[in-house]
Image 1 (cartoon, rainbow, N blue to C red):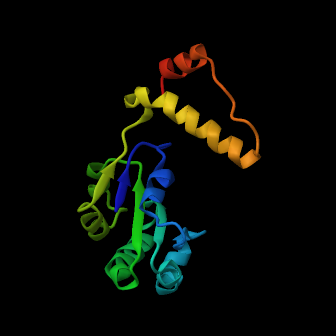
Image 2 (image 1 turned 135 degrees about the vertical axis):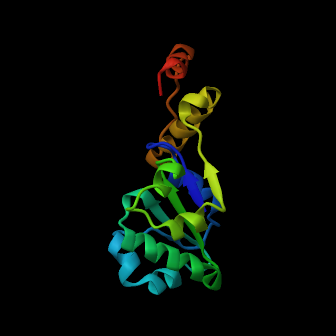
Image 3 (image 1 turned 45 degrees about the vertical axis):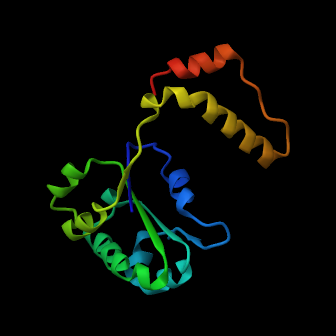
Length: 157
């Protein structure tokens, strides 16, 4: 799966919707791990999610390793979620990109609209974020005035 959106989009939050609680969530610390030990990474991710960052930032060798992982993922019952902050049309024309990887990923693309197109969601998002922060800090959620929420909705995201 490829999550496509602008830089700053909530890629990881969306990817976690595809993660089953209690199953592995694997996010390689360095891209060279994908090249050096791809099957080991898949074994660790068995039954869970292998989350990979922005594929447009990886060199061709890493992209080729990701393409290899995609051919083996089903055998390990692993969902592979990649992200990309550039339009696919730009990537396809770039010699630095592995077109085989792009062809495979283009079959399942989820586009994330930018926040500026989701203004009605801002009050909900503010509520969720303050609730999660309060839970993490074991405190009472912060409350925002209607004026503060209005300013957030008017901000040029």
